[in-house]
Amino acid sequence: MSTNVVLYESKDSIATITLNRPEKLNAMNDDMWGALEATWRRFNNSDDRVAIITASGERAFCVGADLNSPSLDVWRAIPGHIVDVEKPIIAAVFGHCLGGGLGLVQFADLCVAADDTQFAFSEAKVGLAIGAASSLAARIPHKVAMELMLTGDPISAQRAYEVGLVNRVVPRAELMSTAIAYATRIVDNAPLVLAMMKRYAGEVMPKGPVETAALWRRGPEMIFASRDAKEGIEAFREGRKPKFLGV
View (spheres, rainbow, N blue to C red):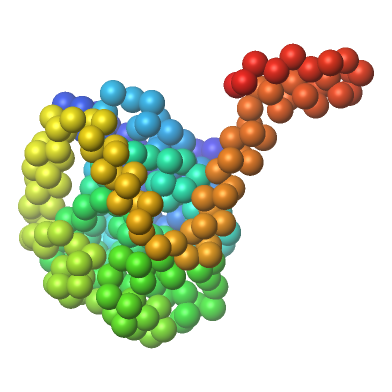
């Protein structure tokens, strides 16, 4: 897997995570989904307390799935599903923010958008979907979410702010400084309290069937990747009693 499709920088306990396929408008392929999953695990295990997710290039934060290699594994990239992330996440977006890119915004805790940002779920126009867009109806007014999903038409950053998808709309030149200012206000707050509030807020949020299925996958995937799973298989093949360690 190529590791440079997602960049990770740490400074002052703030992680900056950058989608890095600008030549493809940061479209998500298997490499990027896998790299994002690994990056959320890295963030979890780090001393960083807040993450900002943004992107390289000028035209797009992320245009969604790379249609040259479509996949059902988009949930690997979304924090809080395959990888549970209880630390705060701030999205800093610009340009085109489509499909899986909008999915990242949905599951971030805060969002700062450049004033040129266009948000859309274009699955209905493309003819491919995994159903992730349905979770939007739990996060913004229902009719607005349905308009986005059924028409596939974009909405502006200002409209996204008006319906509660975005916290701040700023000129492009102020995007990262505004996101960093948010992170700086959060970073010295009590980590356990932040994690508890984020967890509780997530628990009261309605979840669609695709989101629920992704959450259910977390347990089996952890089991299959464990040392005990490998030990159990090896013990069976060798005709001996397994020695489980709980890891």
